[in-house]
Length: 265
Image (tube, rainbow, N blue to C red; front, side, top):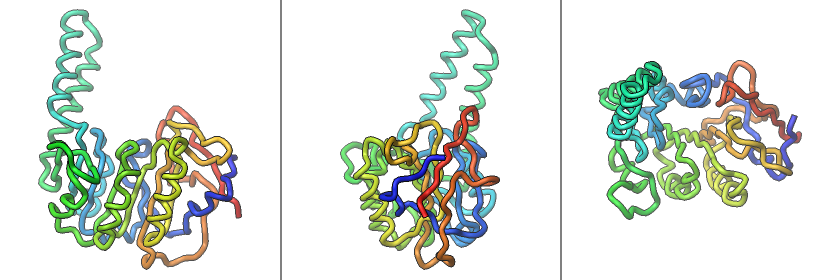
């Protein structure tokens, strides 16, 4: 068991009843309180990566709309990959299942982003726009009418650049789920970012992504999924100290053990 350094006790989550796993059992799933899911009026998703399990499960459970931004996803990219594997099959008789896999991925992407409940924009989330492929946080909220949104943020390290901009719109966001990346390289940024969020929100769940290691000397995962809810929604004062949680958490990589860690009492 990895014992987390006391200086990171601010990450210790409050105990919350009725936590739910939304999305895949493995990578792509996140933890939300049932009450937040029920009361939300929409989902804003920063980062999609062709894994729509969280967004699709949200739609299935709530019948609410989803607004998604990801500059890395495109029909063209998927089509070119499909053509590459098709060419390999025709020339070298490579495995048919590879072609089938990439065709299904292309078809799944099309089906998802053309859903009536989904608005997808191929844009990178930034604090200040410099190119046409970028969008500022302010413009994100200009595009939607959500008043009690859930915000999911999985943008591979760019989260540190937009925390302040997100919090400028805290009155429209009831729950924030962020996957923090490269914590080992951004310890001070990570601490200051989380503490900014904690001015208005409380942590109700954490989970370490087992694709990446523990931060040495501190014993926190270097990639950490954190669920925050508005402080006025918190109903309990007790903490949860030990992770992962049985029957709720699952390893992001099912071929590796999940990351066990415990906070100091």
